[in-house]
Amino acid sequence: MSSEVNRLVDDANSARYVPLDYLRATLTLMVVAHHSSLAYTNFAHIDSKNYLASTAPVVDEARWLFLDYAENFNDVFFMSLMFFISGLFVLPSLRRSGAAAFLSRRFLRLGLPFAVGVTVLMPAAYYAAWRAAGHHEGYLDYWLQNITMHGWPPGPLWFVWMLLLFDAAAAAIFAVFPRRTFNCPSDSRWFIERPLPAFGVMVVVCALMYLPMLSTFGFGVWAPLLTKPFYFQVCRIGLYLAWFFAGALVGAQNLDRGLLARERLLARNWRWWLAGCIVAYNLLIFVPRSHSLIVVLSARGMGALESILWVISCVASCFGFLALFRGVVCTRRPWMDSLARSAYAIYLVHYVFVLWAQFILLDEPLPASIKFATTFAFAVLFSWMTAQALLWIPGARHVL
Image 1 (cartoon, rainbow, N blue to C red):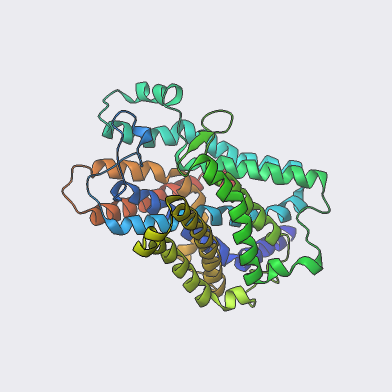
Image 2 (cartoon, one colour):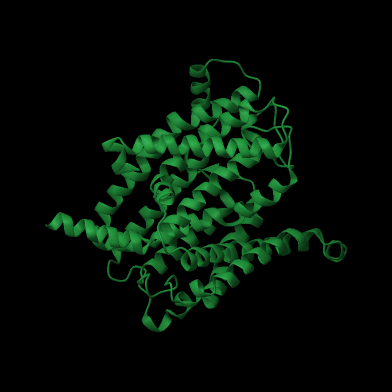
């Protein structure tokens, strides 16, 4: 009888949060599309001496300008939103199980896949880039060099270890302050529960966490935290931390009555928030390229303006996608349920299929649009199939 009650409770909870499940699945597809596009952007270039210093592991001569626009749209916000969604359920999990049990489960769900991924999956993926750079050594020789000499790149799995780090920080705070962690006094919840004040607060917080780091370290610098393969994009670590703990703060309230409630202003006005997301991104793209501003502003001033617009676009896109899915998604779709259940496994394995598809297509005389679409479709299909196969394994099912 108790197991049946638990099953019904789980079904009710999953139905309640289906918009967030579907949003997470959509963001996973955007990650696959993002990586599928990088070989074909106009800014893509290959470093023949160090393939890992290239803009992407595999770079094709075929280019499509639209992918610059679409890829950058993803890059501005989608990982911030992934950290926000991951933070939403941290405090409820901590309250249910306590810090030690919570962290134990997170090490199993995040630490184990990261360890397997960086030793098995990522070398298999980057071997395609190694071959594309003109090397012909066997896989074992390459694998040893990848670990010992080439920096042991984690690829997209940087997100997994960083999420584990943030979870550990949240668990430590909860262990010290179990009754007050992320609890906001009722008279101060206005900036959490109302979308416009929440938007303004997040713009300010993201600017404070991101802009000084960007000014100090630059945009494209990746570095290991203490040791490889724990790489992260240096200028964004504060930004991602802010979004994670913003999710934890929102998730500490009842999601059915807070900012993400279906009857609240964010979900009801999803069209306006989606429009704001599109407008903010296009301002970021076109305003810094305005000839009149280029003449008036110095290079430093133009850089500052673009950075501020970047932050606004990041927050606007996060709010726009949250509003869209919370306001529109209300019924289940079997294929989306499958995708949502497989999303984490797809994220873990997709890079192997993306890089090898790009490598296979290198010498094919096809337009970049066709190569991108083929890579994306191939990666989604085979990642999804792999995820489904993994979920059949009893042990893997508990991790994935």
